[in-house]
Length: 432
Image 1 (cartoon, rainbow, N blue to C red):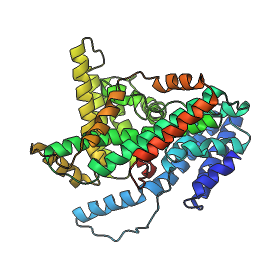
Image 2: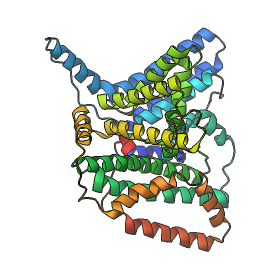
Image 3: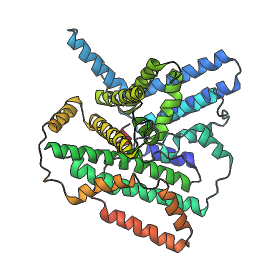
Image 4: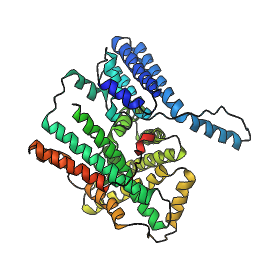
């Protein structure tokens, strides 16, 4: 039933892409079955390489075909070799990056014997296509999800209330905070230096509320179906160094990059310079994963370079004293915000223009309202509250009768509908 619902959910936009999803899932299942059943190490490794190459080839064609061909054409034009290249109009399937990474995760975990291969293909199909996390994560590990299929799902009052609380917080983040910021400050354009600075802060809050809001809804919906997903965000803007930021931001992706890319490259085991190289490669590919454009590559390289600098100077890794903590937080937050300009800009020229505007030090924010400024400030305050706020709220609501809980959630949804701006804005991470 869940598999059928997930395929209907994914195919509602374009049913033809269901075959792509099924193809990736069946590739992972078949490779896992071959690897799990065989004891010959050479065959196991060959199967692993072929399956990963197949999955990356599918991802590369749909996501990077146009980018690489355009870049190649620019290089040929630069050296005077003008050629007509075979351009095709390729539509990017929603969520292809996420379900491809989950398929790779399953195959690698079976190869490492961290999870047993599944004889039933439906288990792997459901793991990769489960609709709450299908189009924008979080990236769920096979070792965390597949064992949950072996037991009967039991919905407790606390699980239901906890799931509904997460869904409510996710809807509030997305429908109110993220959508208002997108309409009022992030999307209109650039004006004065002060406006661009506030818009940069606004985008930092918008992308956090937009993406963490989706993750909250996905985790909450999974809880209502009897599944437990790990949290994907943990107050990232309170980090005092970039390493800590990536332990808190999009945790499922950062852990995936660490376990399946950074550590296999050698991690920090082979000296200082190879550690820096591995950080740069990991974040370069992490930027490219987000989008087929040079601004995403620069965004990833900026994070990689700052992570390397932190390791060189050990900035913020040991922070005794309140002043040092405050300076570490301010530096980290503004490095992240500066990198967000490249992430948000439609192209490199736009990003450069925004930095030029910032350098002019001009004033003027007549277009902003106190309500918009509050939407930037209040979510930042919540970055420094208790990290288990939703759990504590769930405990309080679960301790009362069902009528009280039902009325509370009904009023909460009405408040969101009352506050939310008209129209709909797509989730930012749907494009990845």
